[in-house]
Length: 336
Image (cartoon, rainbow, N blue to C red):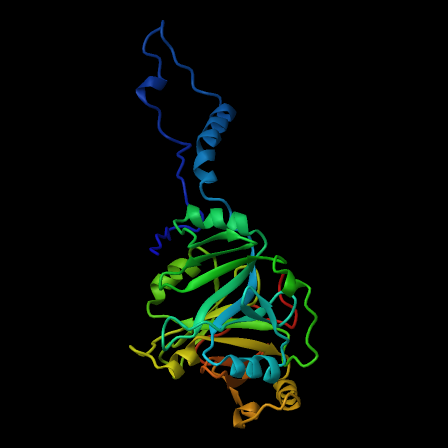
């Protein structure tokens, strides 16, 4: 789907000249024919009346408060259940053939057991919570972004400039999640970011920042002089997306799984290591913690299809490389 964006202003603009010079018609042409200037208040009322239809075409953006879910394909359903259900400790639900693993009552992971459309990609969609899905549809349409999936049951979907499926979910609309009990075996109860491959940062910024209002949080790279990661926080919360820049021209399944990932937040990494041990996590990665370039402690696991699930502490314990943080860090409670 083609996306047409207006990036000069997040809400459109109209220039109204309230101080135009007088034209000849403002001055009396003869004693018999005179035009008196309009009273200032009446003039303002007329101008606002003319401007109202223009501003109405660009309604204000409703709140986008955080990540709702990320959806991935699996070619190994039994292995996926062992990973997301047993190792990560989330209790599976099923809705219309889709597996849902609640992280809390507002965030979850979705797994599709149907064959993936691409042999080297497993991420299908990333979704965000909004307080008013219907108004967000109108807002995006006013900015040239038409839904690919129409609003139904509190959800709708669009494509970003690189073709990624982006969904928006009305808060509280997914009842099996909203009513879910937190699993006693859960290794985390917070989904804090999702990352995906990005080839053209400028085009993505025109959508994510200029239209949706996402805000810079941090950027860095494998080395200080190259930017490989760009973190943008949701407009009305602390969750973020992560551009995974400079992907390989033809990434392998392992490479795409490293980039197309989710992150589970924890206060202390050793709590996650202990929870994984209780869930009988098998392998060296289950306790292999490392310091990230952003100064936050992390631990990486991979599902059977090489999709990365990153555990990350909420706040940094070391000075980050490359750039300072410019937003509030997430906490154990999601912004709503």
